[in-house]
Image (tube, rainbow, N blue to C red; front, side, top):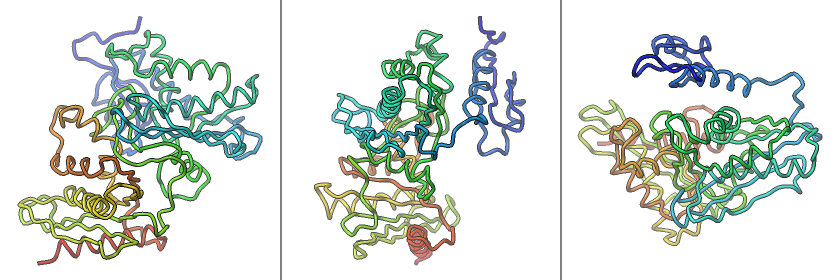
Amino acid sequence: MPKKSTKKGESWYAVAKGHKTGVFQTWNEAKQQVEGMRSAKFKKFPTQEEAQAFVNQHAAATQTQPSDPDPKDPNTLVAFCDGSALQNGQRGCQAGYACIFPHHTEWNVATKLVEDRATNNRAEYLAGLEALKRANIEDPDGNRVLYIFSDSMLLIRSMTEWVATWQKNGWKKSDGAAVMNRDLLELLVKETDSRRVLWRHVKAHTGKQDWKSNYGDYGNGGGYGNGGGYGDGGGYGDGGGYGNGGGYGGGGAGLPPNPRDTNTLVAFCDGNALQNGQRQCQTGHTSIILQHTEWNVAAKLVEDRATNNRAEYLAGLEALKRANIEDPDGNRVLYIFSDSMLLIRSMTEWVATWQKNGWKKSDGAAVMNRDLLELLVKETDSRRVLWRHVKAHTGKQDWKSKWNDVADNAARDAAMSC
């Protein structure tokens, strides 16, 4: 039997990535190992066994063995998988998934997911399942290693950390709740069988031109939406925890349109706050519409305690409003580029969960700026929106960086205007 905590409320703390890894009995001990590390990985568990399993599984998942084949070798089985959902988890949700094989393009799959309440999480699982099925058809003896690249931490962690424990516990999570999407997880386990599968995470929408990022972007275009939470486990940050959360906008059938095409709606949005959150804070927001400069907005935000976060939300809202005025039927895709991860993640990961939970975060606190978030959701409606992050103040001269600087300067000027 797992060794449980002996005192009520006592827990075990697993540090899988930190100054020192291991299992600790107090948060103070664990905290010392993760403080100052932006990429630290840690989690609280009710038993020592579960905590140790977390550490062991992470080590196994991230270790690259010397005999690992080169994924860029044409003889290696490699798949880039992605799933998307527009209006995630709601009736009439448009969802799809794609599985791209760089070395065997004739195997590629991009298909719509037809379910009453399709979710981004199910689409991600199905994309991985397609990769496994194709590998087993082409290499039935399982002699070749299969790389599966995905931007879904749900898929990666389900298969490398959680699924064995879920099976052992009768498909129950640590809190006793049933694991969601068990039907697909059982199929994934079955198709994996004795094949060696190297599950690899690739960051989404980086804008980089490296090999992994390019193929990851192709995979992203195969479905609908950009929403989704992260799986069935614990919780991180403001997103309401892992779960079948969702997002708004961000997908579409086939490959996404070129944002530099004059027929595509593209907005660069930014917010700026001087003396953020204080009385008489000077704040402005801007939305720069590339193909239609006459639609540009740069406005001062006049509020008693204006904040940068509200300015960022308002900038995105201006882009959506203008798109809906000029294209009321939502026929044209809208790209929204922003250097605000708050705006991007609010609309692609967190907002559906917040709505479901009565605009409460996972810790029970009220979600801030609900008034603007509700307007953003309303304006998004059924339009296909591709939310894209762009790094701020890079000094680079590429297309995205230059336009982000234009938006940043316009927002600052608006904030300082009389």
